[in-house]
Length: 98
Image (cartoon, rainbow, N blue to C red; front, side, top):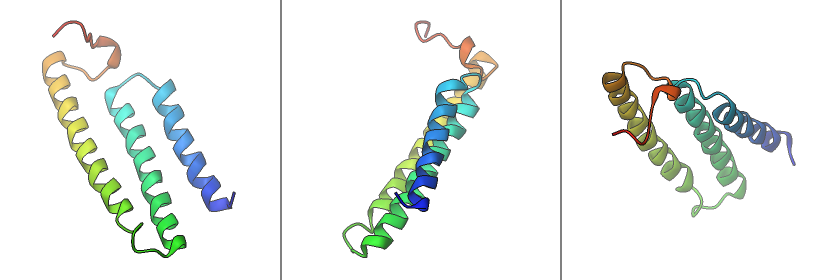
């Protein structure tokens, strides 16, 4: 494993650990998801540059489009949650109560 691959693997694992262990606010969970998606995007970009193939060059752009959609949906949920519940704390959300 090259140092670059190790750095992006560690970045992804740190984002995953932050998502798993820091469950206080919805905004912090969304930031951990964005960090994971950013590390995947950079890793895919470097991977497609190393392979020097035209078929893998669209994968980073597709991932970037999906991460933008995920970010907009997450922010919409954050705003809706803050308006209905008054806070973004994950402990105050009850999924059984609609």
